Structures are given as C-alpha cells and as structure tokens.
Length: 426
Image (cartoon, rainbow, N blue to C red; front, side, top):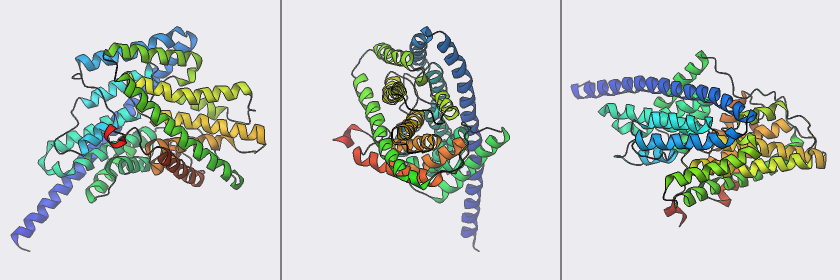
C-alpha cells in the first residue's frame, strides 16, 4: 500500500469517525429538545385548557394573548423573521449558501410552545422538526469535513426529533426520507440510523409512554370496503385542509398591519373554541376521549352534527392560527381530523346500515390516512400512528388505506402545504 492510498484511507476513517460522533450528538440534542417541548407543552396545555373549560372567557383571552406574545418575540428577539415551517428546511437543503440560522432553535421551541398552550389549533411537530433540523445544520457548519453532508445531517436531526415525539424510530427515518431527502446515500443511512438509535435510546431511558393507550385486538375482512371508503374520504379531507391553509395564508398576507391579522385570527379561533372546545391546542385531549369512549355509541343527529362541525372547523381554525402568526403545521390537525372522521364513518355505518364495524379501528386508520394524504408520505403515517398507539394489529389495513388516501389527494390536488408555491401552481 503506497503513501497516497494510506493517507486516503486514514482520511476516510477519520471522516467516518467524526460523522458517527456528530450523529450521536445530533440525535441526543434533537431528542432532548423534542421530549422537553412535548412534556412542557402537555403540562401547560392541560392547565390552560382546564382553566378555559371552567371559565370560557379564557377561550377569548388566551388566543389573542398567545399570538401577541409570539408577534413581539419575533419583532424584538428573533430578528423580525416569520417562521415558514418545513419550507425553511427545503430552502436550506436546496441551496448551498442558505442555512438554517441558530436562532431557529429557540424561535420554534418557544413559539411552538406558546401557540399550542394558548389554544392555537395546531401542533408542536413542525416546530420540533425545524428546530431539530437546525441542530443538524449547525453541526454541519462546524467543520469543513461535513460540508458535503448538509442534507444528511439535517435529516439526522429531523429523524431524531420525530423519533422523540412519537416513540417511533422507523417513522423518523421514513419522514426524513419521504419528505426531506427523497434519496438514500451512505452518509444518510449512517447519520440518520445513528441519530435515531441515540434518540430512541433516550426515549427508552426516560420510559416515555405511547401517547394513546389503545386496545386493538382484531379487524375483519368484511370491513375492507368501508376502509376503502374511509381512505377516499380521508384524501378529500386532507385536500380541504391543504387548501384551507393555503387560502388563509394568501388572504392574510394582503393585510398590511400585522396586529390586524392577530385580531382576525383570534376572533375566528375564539368563536370556534367556544362552540367546540375540542379544537383547543393540539386536540390530543379530544382524541384520548374518543379512545376512552369509542364503543358502540349510537349515532344521533346532534352527535353527527358535532362530528361534522369539528371536521369542517378544524382546518379553518388551524389555518387561522398559522396565518395570524402561530407556529406549527398539519401533523396534529391531520391526526385530529382523521380520528373524528373515522369515528363518524364507523358510527354512521353501525347506526344506519348495521355494519357492525369496530369504531376504534376506524379512528386509528383515519388518523393515519389523513396524515398520509396531507404530507404525501404514507409509510411515515403508518409507522407514526402505530408508534403512537404501540400497536401493529392494523398494519395491513392502514397500509392499504394510507395509499388510497394519498393517491386520492394527489389526484384531486397535487400539492401539499410543504410543496406548494405560486410558480408551481401556474
């Protein structure tokens, strides 16, 4: 072996060792950030929601207060920059010169927390994804040896963040692949697998429990036609969510005074919360209620109107939250809409057509189906929802329904909130 070959081998070994070390650091920091944000949000959201439930005036006060605080933080602390969500990651990975600045970590952490705990009808998932992606981006800039691994290290942070939130390492890897990278390289596999393993190790050490406690025992072949129906409806509902978000952002962008946006968004949010308190924050409290009471409750006219109202209003209040300056995305809203849609379909089938389907199965499948269609990432949705419930009994029907919902959505409207741009739509 000549000197040149030996030097190249040593350099490759050193580069590999550094990549392993930095991937461990990214995984730990991203997971710590994700778990911290989840715990703090859950704690304060429960307190504030209980306060508003006992005194409805807080459904009016909390949204305008939260959105105002976020505005002043952006104006005077975070360089007057609005958070664009996952599009910020795309802008960074598609450009050699554009990077995710360091302040995006505290910006998304704080603003995502404030949005949800004060009633903003979205979730912390996108806040976590962008903040953890920034951890990867910062690590990539620290040493010249990592310059070529920009996308890979950002994906490592994203995958670790998703793993921490949903206790599903497979969902983390698939989200980084399906949504962010869309290609597999050796560096992607090394960095992402190590970061995810580190993140899942932290989740295991902290004994993080699944978000939802569900007992799913079986599913029946006779339900397949109804699952297909649910998949089609989920795809259409996801398009409605996407179009709502894009429409509200477009209309609110025409308002020149930012505080008018806050007032308008708060009015929409407050009125909706007064009518349907289930729309408060992430809405996971409402989904837990569904899981606890999703037996064979007969579908009444008033109950059907409630479910339909919630399904129609959720995209509107989510869009108003985001357009008026709230921080978040469509992860939690998609899971929320899917849960109520699944329950509505199952209860209607059982009451009107004596279909004898299992409502809880439809709730879980609906969650995965709407998420799959909203982000055009069916495999992420499958493992994410299975991780949320810590149950893989429904894996096969979820797979089928997620594919149906995705392609229904894609044929109806080819964009997601992540991929849409004015130039593409013309």
